[in-house]
Image (cartoon, rainbow, N blue to C red; front, top):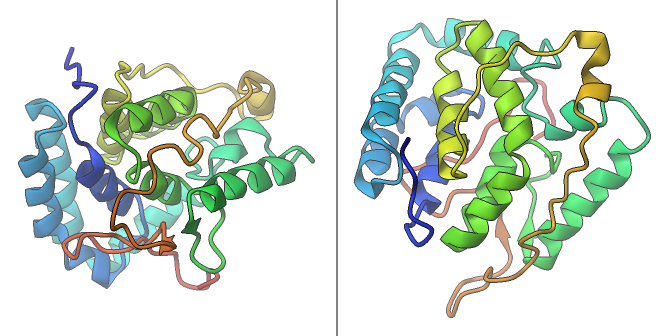
Length: 238
């Protein structure tokens, strides 16, 4: 198994993976070649995973844009098992979800980071943008805190034979975890199955502000011109 070094940079790879999980609008797809190059240049992921991600990037660039967007909505917005909103897997529609959202937003605020207007703090692409601001050790620890949720989404995507599964597998590898494509729990038992508490303040603001780093920044806006900001589906809040 590929084990990433605790000192190896992964910030660019995290931003690319964030972009790959975002809505595949025209701007996102216009940067696919730059994203591919950025992933390969950083060397944070094993070659086999990079080749899988190449396949996803090729598909995003080859498939009819409208079909590509429709497939994304069908995959991520029409079912709880593949939802990219992390607290959907932990709290579902319970009253605990609101306070958890507030806690996570406060973690971002302590770091001097801002969410884009209308964006929920538990949206995985936004979470990854935040994690990409962390030093490697803290980033890996943060990914480890959400690994059980990421693996649940990975398993659901594998079951649906989705090429997006390679992105979730890459995140698990960056966390030092091994992807396990176990069968997802029944829909009605999901909240109980994923009741394990998730603490998102493991990194808090430690190591966030570096000398000369401008604050605040949009956590869903890439610091690299080669990697586009995350996008929402048409009709979502801007």
